[in-house]
Amino acid sequence: MESTSWLHDEILRLKEERHAILLAHNYQPDDVQDIADLTGDSLELSRAAATMEGDIIVFCGVDFMAETAAIISPEKTVLLPAPDACCPMADMISADELRFAKSRHPKAAVVCYVNTTAEVKSESDICCTSSNSVKVVNSLEEDQVIFVPDRNLALYTQRFTSKEILPWQGFCHVHDRITAGDVRKAHDLHPNAIILVHPECRPEVIDRADHVASTSGIIRLVRELPEQEFIIGTEIGILHRLNKECPAKKFYPLSQGAICTNMKKTDLAKVRQSLVDLQPRITVPEEIANRARRAIGRMLAV
Picture 1 (cartoon, helix red, strand yellow):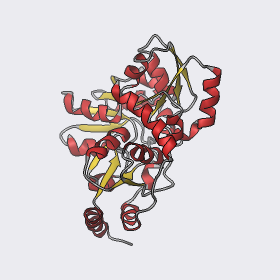
Picture 2 (cartoon, rainbow, N blue to C red):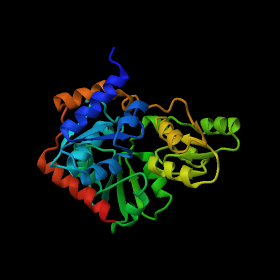
Picture 3 (cartoon, rainbow, N blue to C red):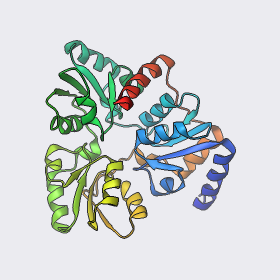
């Protein structure tokens, strides 16, 4: 079995040799986060990498994240160390299905969450993130919005807009299985803790939270709020970063079962091998990339 310390040193050597940027999503395994140049949300990472010097992006995350990096940085080689790391929610809608929905609602604008494939982005008018969905929807001229693929984020966004949102019935299996009962149990165990949840959670979970925010938003709130105890309602990988950045505060998972198995498919051995082989490489056909880039660009302009 390969030594973790040896792998760590080899990755750093290869990263320098290959002039590579190593990105890790907040839900990645602890040791992968620790070796990354940047840790964060998917779009946050892709945008940052576009401004950094480097020929190669090693994206420790899932497939749609690597696709987004390839769209934003077409001049860079994008590697996904775990090629079978997918996002089940992103796979709950296809470009053909979205085209059919558009034909049924020709006057509606299409807002797609960044947690979608490049093909779905290319069929959308504008992208959004979990932190800017309300701002994006309210920026549109259309009164009706097809919102894909996450129904929970769509329902959360509907709370803050007069527009009619038509939610696609997709969901994040990690967040959707968190229940109101989980909130009650966590609060009973930690009555002094502030409850922070992700907007991909069910409405009844959001109703019981003190704050709702994206992963980066949760991290920011933890830094800024004076309270010392927090119940965290998102994938448990974020607890590693929270404990590192705010060691004086205490963090409790809202649900011990909030684990994304796809996010855990990356390990140091795979990261090293991707740098050795420069594979698996993620590419997006130019026509799809150009159309998807417009949807992302329109969001960034809001």
